[in-house]
Length: 326
Image (cartoon, rainbow, N blue to C red; front, side):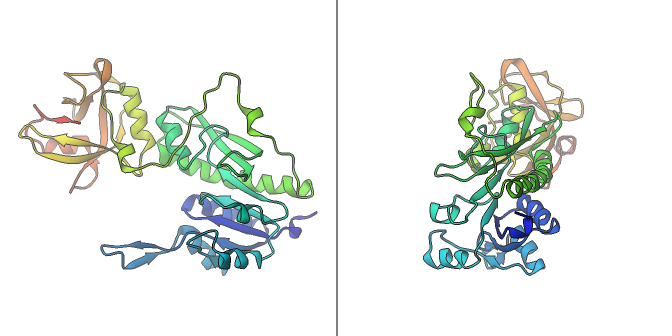
């Protein structure tokens, strides 16, 4: 077999997936069609339809694009079958029904932004940083009946440096994922379409606790100031730059507003008062956490205002005595 024998359907939606699709095209692989999410309504009244990043790139190359609302729709399934793909590659897409993932002769493999079996789910990057991991990676695996549980083809590690937030890890894994996908395709070609793939049960270390990576919702992003300072810092890092960790700012006169925290200093300082109390630490804003510690806020945003340094926020505050976050 050579790579010319592969007819590939690519499935993905966000910018993260574009890097892999670009690698396939520029690597000379035959991508016969692209499947992505339907255009998303944006704007004040949802009157403007925004195509996904994958669709924009695919259209720039003149690749056929399919945008099913329901993956089990008979019309979509037949249209997909008409491209006669013998392999499907999935990156940051949605859960596929068996009629779709089992269609190609050589199966369907996914490029997942974690070292499976760790961090199965929709938000592996966020949760790895939130949990203070120092290492994550990329896994390619064949899709199976249960989400993120299929046989693993390749795993490549990626170090999470202390200063990295989720955006930094996203960018790093985006490029790593593209490379791992190409190496996975090379292995598939070398093995005549059937590379060695290991069950995930054999990859779990004795005593290793598996962490899930469920979808992130608004309520997920609420900061709990009763956690340790390190825990709060990791939480903020894991949700930055998007969707952003948030809290409620309560002024001394009782006014309440949403405040997002995008970054904190690495240094942990001594707190003042109870968790959630605000105080000045040099020119920056600090917030007391558990155990008498505090985090120093670097970048933040109060509802109705632009993102700013906490020093600029304090310049606009006459007094923060009696102010708190909760």
